[in-house]
Length: 95
Image (cartoon, rainbow, N blue to C red; front, side):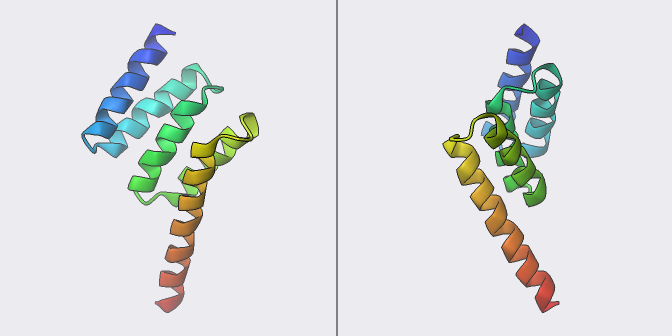
């Protein structure tokens, strides 16, 4: 549990400095220790959104909503992921 907290805090610190790839990696390490902790999934989804990885962000939010069906952050970030996917689809259609 101590390692989980340390990794999560390191991920949070990376988010604060805008290092989203590093933060996502820390949250991924957290998930290896505890797959039921929803905050690391919503945090990693935020990183993925910042990195324009909308499908990955949506997948993390879907996972959270299977565990906590009323998680507001997961709903919000999934909506942002859907929005990003729609924009990408429109751009690709224009090419």
